[in-house]
Image (cartoon, rainbow, N blue to C red; front, side, top):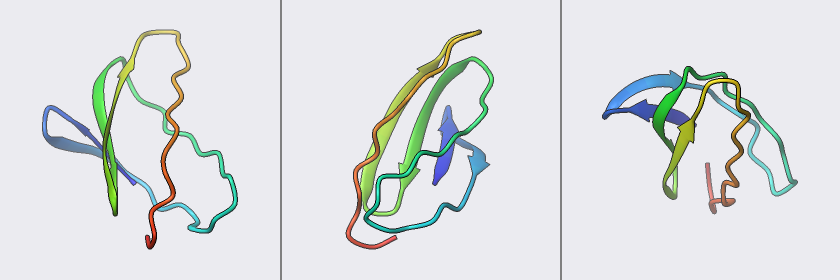
Length: 63
C-alpha cells in the first residue's frame, strides 16, 4: 500500500495479501492523504490531530 499527500509518496508499506480480514496501521501526521494499492481506486482520508482514522480497503483480485 502507498500513501500520497498532494501527489507525493509519503509512506509505502507491504502487507500480507490473502482473503482473510486484516487490520493494518499507518501513523500519519495531520492532513489529507490518498491511500493507493494495486487494483483499487485511491481512497481519500483526512487525518486530524489526536484522532484515529479508519479506512475499509476492498480486496483486489491480486496484490
